[in-house]
Length: 239
Image (tube, rainbow, N blue to C red):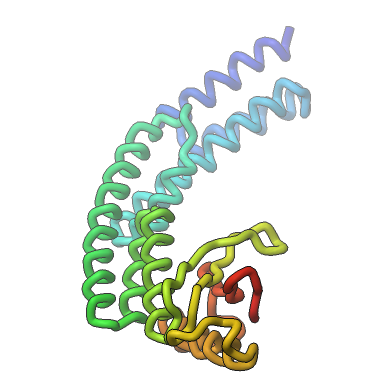
């Protein structure tokens, strides 16, 4: 029947468009003509969805190439990742993505070397900034979290906490927050200190944390994905 024949023709048009045998404008005109002929049947609607997905994929590929040529590898990677498997551009998009990933990993390694150098010089804001840039490139949360923990522990030691341990816990929204554990503060057992003194020292630490991770933001809103929550010592929470 007409609809069966149209299905085959529509699939062929999609294939021609996919292989650059006909332009996007041309395939759209022919689809419109067959829509007038058979109407918005399930056959036509299915073919139209396939065409729309392919058009979007090819647009993503073209935008990815443009962004890559402009030196915007991060956004180019996102566009290439939107290219679908049945798009003839898919293998090339995958190749671009592999190249970008390799470049990002090399840049991330160099940035982590910088982060470690800054850390050794106690330039904590510069060190955390370099580590965050490395994470944005590599998306390696394990390396980033390990470095953040090291910075938090170091800041706590500088504020008088002894044997501090930066740890993570799920907050009420199901996200992981950092908190701090310790045994003693400035050589004193916690039971020998007033709660006000404990909290005062913890607030000094929080200020140090704030300046290490976001000195230009407000203290209450500056922590982003590396929030430092409360202090836990000898079975008791302090905030």
